[in-house]
Every structure is written in structure tokens, then in C-alpha cells.
Length: 228
Length: 228
DNA sequence: TCAGAGTTTTCGGCTATCCTAAAATCACCG
DNA sequence: CGGTGATTTTAGGATAGCCGAAAACTCTGA
Image 1 (tube, rainbow over the protein chains, first blue to last red):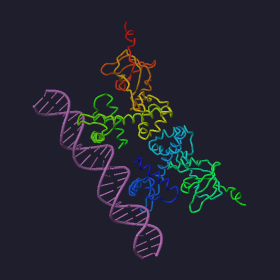
Image 2: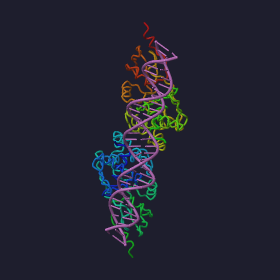
Image 3: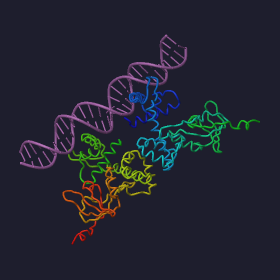
């Protein structure tokens, strides 16, 4: 009763519900690359297993039991990512895809072993927090980079890890966790932003900027510089 | 068309056919803990895929294509075993079970990475040879320990890794690859053998001794010692 | 308020893998 | 040669996931 499919569904539902509010079946379908009807079927099953509650035509919400399983899987995933990156030197943009497969076969014992070898890390290579053994996570108070205004500075806390091409792009720009960014300008009509990242100037589209999260936002001195 | 089940079937068929001659469906069924009829069905499928040939009521034999897949899976399995044992300190008797799950999710890229980290090992922790990247293996010229006679000495080359309780037993006796053994006596009617392993004397049943393979068999001096 | 448009569910069907039980075949022995 | 026990295959059915298309529902805008 805890197949790979079940784990995958719970994981993406957890992820999608981080935005708050119920999760639609279509959003799940998109994330899992599955037909909408398939999701309805699986949701019924998970509901029967009391892993989530489902209001027809409304959406879905994890129960505590479902949340626990989701967090277990996420812990596996992020620990494996960290392990691959740190202990095996797998490139930043590939660890996600590998971890996606490993997360389902990792025994608790080996999980502990990895945790120990890595010295109980708290984040994965993309900056996402690794749930503790007793499944506590503190979701960070981060904003999307896309939501910053010109003149603001911040620190990258996390980057979305689903798209490896995008990750390569972020790496090229120097946008990884801990990096400082300064927003130099923001074009209107959802246009590109220009940034200063570790000395270098660069431009980034709004869509990509949605997948970079920042904390520690503060006003810069750019406005003063621009004043005559 | 290359599901985990397919890989598992090919792997055990390869393993069973090492003894020479065709492989019966029932032996496959036993190894995979599956009903006999299930095996017939899968065998038909693999036969259609030209991964093996099947003569009804006679048995099954891998084709070259089937053998290649089997060897890929076995390479994965044994490399993972070595990695778990050496790089992650997983106990000897547990690596098999973990590897059994990992072998199906290991990418070629990560396989290479492990191979490199380990320095291109040639055997797994139980002494079985790891096929090379281009899938060459030299099956060793080993005999079962059970087939030795009193007075013979030999070197352990390999131990069967399926049963972890048996592996713990072997470890206790000191029977692991490279160890020297001397057969002190062999009881008749398939009775126990007494051995000297690294100085210590011990007894072992014939059934267990079937799962220990030895090479470099030579006559000892025990007979002289026994003479008046 | 009610007609699309868009979303969600239902329905029939497909594949992969497994099972049990009955039928077919084989192998051996008197 | 034929019967009997063991092995193997066939047959009918189950479950888990998936799909496409039709039906049901919701939401929004005039």
C-alpha cells in the first residue's frame, strides 16, 4: 500500500500545498505528467487510505498521515541530493533527477548512514531544508526574486530544482544559495530584471526569476546613486 | 520494455544457467518467489522480445541480447554492493538486500562515478567478479567447499550472498574471500565437515558448505599427521 | 440568471504483473 | 506399455496505474 506512485503523489501534493490552500487535481496532473482523470482515480484511493481529504471539484488536502509520508520522501530526496552532490561529486543540475529515482529505494538505515556521513546537513544543494529525522521542517520565509523591486538587495536562499536546464542557467549567472543579489532594474509588463550577482551584471526573465527565492531583503543605495 | 521485473528475470536466469544447461521455469519461480504459471507467462514475453529462447516443457536459455542485459544488471548490483560496503560501511550481510533495490535505479553515469571512486574494483564484497564496462566476466574456476575431501586445503574465492543469516554465519567462522581453509574431516552421509580457518577449528554443515566456493585446491599434510 | 469556457469526474479500456486451479506433458518404473 | 507423480502450461481472474473521451460541474460575464 505504499507504492512509488503513492509516494510521488503525496510528495507533489505536499509541495503544491506549500502555497497555502487546497490543491487542484489538474495541478497535480501537470506536475506528474499524467492525465487529469488519472489523478482523480488516485486521489480517491489516497482518500480511502486516509492520506488526504478530497472535496469533489474543490481540491485536495493532506491529512497528518499523508503529510508524514510526504515529509519522509522529501527527507530521502534531499538527503540523497546532498549525498550525490557532496560525496559523489554529481553536478548540481543532475542531482535532482537521480534523487528522484533513489528516494524510493533508500532504507531508513542507509538514510541514517548518509545523514551521518554528511554530518547532519540541514539543506539540500538547492537550498531547500531537509526535514529532520522526526520530520520537522521550517519552511523558510522566502520571497520569489521576481517579486523584488529595483534597488532591493537580498540573499538567495533556494532555487527551484525541477528543471535542470534552468539550474544550469542559474549556475551560469551565479545564482545559488547564499549568493547576494541586487536588483538594478525591473522592466515593466513583466519584462526582464537586471541584477548584480557577485560583482557581475546580468539580466534574467521574470519566469526564471519566479524560481529563485530570496531572504534577508533590504533596500540598497541604488536610488541615491541614480539621483542627480 | 525494460521493467524491473524483466531485469530480475534475466538476472536470475543468467545466474541459474551458470551451472550449464537449460534453466527450468520452476527454478526461476523459486528464486523469484513467484508462482510457476507466472514464470511461464513472463518467459513467453521475454521470448517474444528475443531475450531468451524457450522450448516448451524443456527450459529456457538466454540469447546474447538477454545475456547483455543480465550482465548490466549484475554489474550494477555488484558495484553497488562494493560501494555500500567500502564507501558507506554497510555491514557485509546487508549489502545484498540494499543492492537488490538500487541496481534498478542506478544510471550509467553514477555507475561510472562509483567505479571511479572505488578504483575499478574487480569483485564484490562476497568475492563475485564485477563485469567490466563492456560486460566481460571471467567466471572463476571454483568448486564448492562441500565437494572437498579431508586433508585438502584451499582458498575461499566467493560466498553465496542471498541469505544474510548465512552470511553472518560465514563471517563468524571467518569464511570470507581470500581466507584459507583446511578440511580436517568430512562426516559420511552428507554430514558436517570440520575445518581449520585462520587457526580456528570449526564445523560446518554440508548445505552451508555448498554456498562457499574455493579455488587453489591443494593436498595438505594431514594424512601424514594422522599416520601412526 | 444563464450560456459558454474551463475544470473535474466518470467510464470503458489497456498493459504489466501476479495468483489459483485445472489441464497437458514428461519421466520413470513395474 | 501404461500408469502415476512431478513439472509445466493454460485459463480465468485480480490489482495497480495509465489513457482518452464523454458527462458533470463551477465560474464568470453579460
